[in-house]
Structures are given as C-alpha cells and as structure tokens.
Image 1 (cartoon, rainbow, N blue to C red):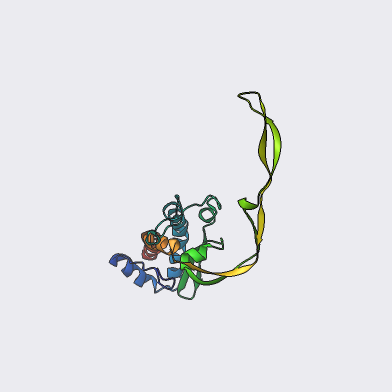
Image 2 (image 1 turned 45 degrees about the vertical axis):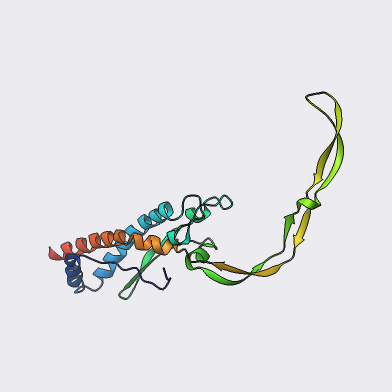
Length: 199
C-alpha cells in the first residue's frame, strides 16, 4: 500500500441521504464524524495488534505482517497508538501510528545508505584459555582442563552500509481491512444526530 493512498469508506445510500440533510447544519456533520472516528480508532488499533503485529516472523512481505522478535519483546505491538480526530473546516482527520523508530521503515520501506556506529563483536578465534586442574566425577582422577578465561572481542569501526527494506505496511493494510469499523461507528453517530434533527 502506497502511503499516499487514501482509505475509502463507503456509506449505505440511506446514510448518504442523512449526511446530505446534516450538511444544513455545518457544525453537526464534522462533530458526528469525529465522535464516530474516536470510537472506531481504538478498535482498529486492537485489530492491527492482533492480526498484523503478532506471531513469530519473519513473514512474507505480501502478508503485510510483522512478527514479535525476541530482541524487542513485542515493543512495536505494545506501542501502537491512536490520536483523537481533529476537525479543520470540513476535514476530519484521525491517526494511528507507532513511535518505535523502526515502525516507519517497515511501513513505508527504505532503500539507501545508513550509518552504523562503532560496536564490539565477539570473535571465538580470539578467546583466551588457560589450563586448570580438575577432578573427574566419574573416575576421581585429576586431569588438566582447557578453561576459557576471556571472550575474544574486536571493535568494528563506524561505517555506512546499504539497506533495502521492502514496505510491509501493516498499519495501512490493517486500517484498510477495518474500514468497515470506521463506517459503522460514523454511521451510528450520523444517525443519532439526524434523528435528533427530526424531532
């Protein structure tokens, strides 16, 4: 999914006619949409967490999923957030995202040079050993054992490298899959305001 793509929400003809009537009161329609979005977005977040950000990956790119790595312990899943919808004129905007820095790379993809800071790496061939006296538990006889005294370490200098990461777009696809939740909740709020206008 291209990040520029819009999520299409389709309303039933009856809802569209209510929307047209609510346009007579310009402040009402955006408020109804905002209330519906604010109720729908937490539900969409839960669905994305359950369907798009769980399991042991890596998953094929075309599945638009990210697994929970042992290294990060499900941090991406736990960090998904939604922000309340904002009304600006006739536009109502809500958002779902994740502050974890690698979330955007997996969502939109990336190809280019990245900076890798200097780091230490263990090198088994540089491990140091000594001989130590040991006693066999089975025979009770003494013997000389080879015991590691230190792990070999080398420092890798800071450098740049090329990185190519495909766009998995778990958030974009998760929102698109759950557009029906947005439609349902907004429809309920539009109907509430329309019915109040009829009385």
